Image (tube, rainbow, N blue to C red):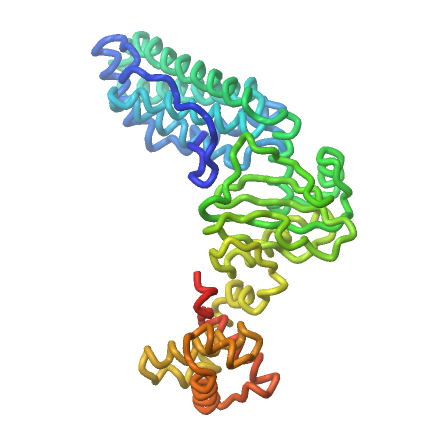
Length: 418
């Protein structure tokens, strides 16, 4: 029940204009609710745990570990917290309605049935009210009579929020792809999180229409222009490759069923001009999509924002540096340590020259063109680098050491910098 991630913009309309406050039941009601709100804040985590446990037990949808949103507890906490904020400060009563509107939109996009979302809101409201009454009666029994007026006030707010949630859900669902396709999202998210129970995976395979033992790759896209609108198709086939799109909190995942292809074809998945894209190596079977997701994250972390989808297999040494920064630092220190005594500008010049030379396939001429200098200048810098490090670029082992140390140091050729 939190607002959509900034990386997942949708076409949805804003909520209708809300009054600054729901009509109150009088000063006595307002006073007891402000007092109760202060009592509720410290115990909200307990209320959330109880509400989530009851919801999982009472709802077939939320009780299913495959279908239930991964952020259920966090969502419940956010919704109850903003509601309690409206009890404490009357000027904030509209906030819970706005929050409910956004929740309705987001749960519609996730394929959660409206009835299940309304059930969740009712359970949360009931749990909150029961805790409110219990706390006030225990701490200030003299104020208990005012709860009769406060009840009407609280439940008017709950009714307003659920009405807004329902309307937002209906409007959003009307402009979204088929519900059956939207329900693929929680299934894909479970697999990408590493859920590999054989029984569930076989059920997922049937649900998605994919072979459980096929060959797959996972791509992750992040940055400007990579978010996918909620109305865009979640499934498509490009050049014969089935692609399943799945928005995540901080990126967009794409699961590709490769069939007999050795790898994901270049250029198949578009990345915005300023976006980043990383794709895993091939993984075997739906049960391995969690590992594919982890590998795609490494590829994403190791690639520049150049609008290209980068394969992990092409950037393994840099991925190693990202995955094990402690070992990467040790490699960089062991190989490039002698350069730390140089003036920073000279050190950067030598490392950038090495990066350009490696990027241009060991050609001093092409590296010079990239750096806007003569090939002899490149050659002289590389010779100085060899003398300082005690390694020779003509020696394959030394070359591997220098390339890995360069990746660990985070130095890129000028046209490959982030």
